[in-house]
Length: 108
Image 1 (cartoon, rainbow, N blue to C red):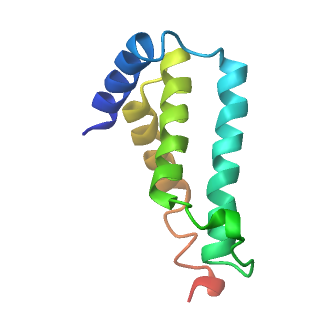
Image 2: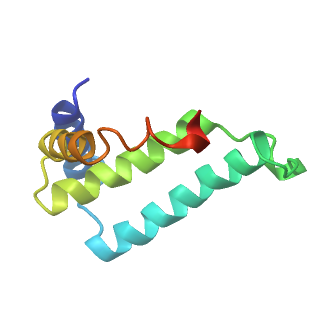
């Protein structure tokens, strides 16, 4: 699935199953909540925190998909073509960071 197709699929789902989009502020808050859930799993799986009994059923791919879903909702609501935005962002990074990371002693 392309990013464009994902935006279309999410829009169709929202307008049928989801009834309508939550407003942008609500979706921003939901995005922060979903990112927090990913951070919690990362801290426990790859960081120093240990899993709690209530964390046993965590599913990192599903939580990452939740983040992507809400981000796509926000893009759709604000008229952003994520394919175009990502392409422009990668171009910016490629120019800005052309030698930056290669010359970073911390990365060697």
